[in-house]
Amino acid sequence: MEREKSRLKTKSNVYRALMGNVVICAAKFGAWLSSGSSGMLAEFIHSVVDCGNQALLLIGLRDSRLDADRKHPYGYGKSVYFWALVSALGTFFLGAGVSMTHAVDNLLNPSLHDIPIEVWGVLAFSFVVDGYVLSKTISETMATRPATTSYYKHLANIRDPATLAILLEDGAACLGVVLAFGGIAASHYTGNAIFDGVAGVGISALLGVMGIALVKMNHRFLLGQAVDREITEEIGKILLSRRSIDSIRSVQSQWTGPETFSYKAEVDFDGTYLAARLMPIYQKEFVKIRDTMDTELQVMLALYAEDVMRTVEREVRHVEANIRKKYPGAEYIELE
Image (cartoon, rainbow, N blue to C red; front, side, top):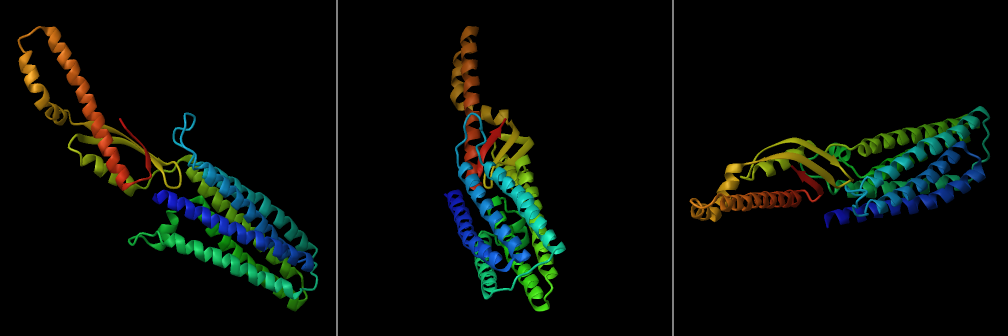
């Protein structure tokens, strides 16, 4: 239930960002046509890239909800990281590359038309919309912060690529608007279009940095990042709290999606405890066949061995239920 709420919240954040960027994109395009500003062109490309990124994130969110199957036994949770990686590469190569090409050309051949009043309005409108989306996303993200966790650590622990992308993109969008405003204003008051070109280069560089940051984050999770040590240690305590378990070793874990993970460990069961569990059932039976033929003893031992295995299976089911009760995201637990 909590995971479904989180997914719906993430989807809502992406849709909100997408709708805002579509409106901003159209406004910036009109402002660029009327002003010929390099900074405004870079901002228009920035918004186009953001729209494309958010569309790709929606595809990833859709695919990540597919159930596990024979080809993908650990589910499709990492699909969202793949599409987020594609969008990050698009930000770097298309967004930063295309806008930098135009910005450098404008820097070498500066030209700036008269700045109509609408341009200032578009910049202000863009800042307000992007700022609203950013503040809303930050507010919802911080609402899930544990009381004992710092703001920085909470942000660093976010594994949802859609939320991280929105935070980075809208933060960069607000900063990009400030750069565009500064460049256009400086060119307008000095009559020197080079300031506008510098703003365009700055916005392009900003897109490049954002793209690299997103690529690194998604690359890390696609490779299979280990589950937080606090979680694996707590799971170890849950396992060792069972009287049937002597020790655990060879622990392996990884995040299979933003909120799901796999946990694998070799478990040593206490044979004495298991035997004690079955003793009330088999003690009388063993006494009865003590003086009988070996064949009856073999049958009884076979039944006893089967019951030992069933007892182990019950213990595994119980401990898995305890783990999932504390960590609902533990979808894949393998105890050997």
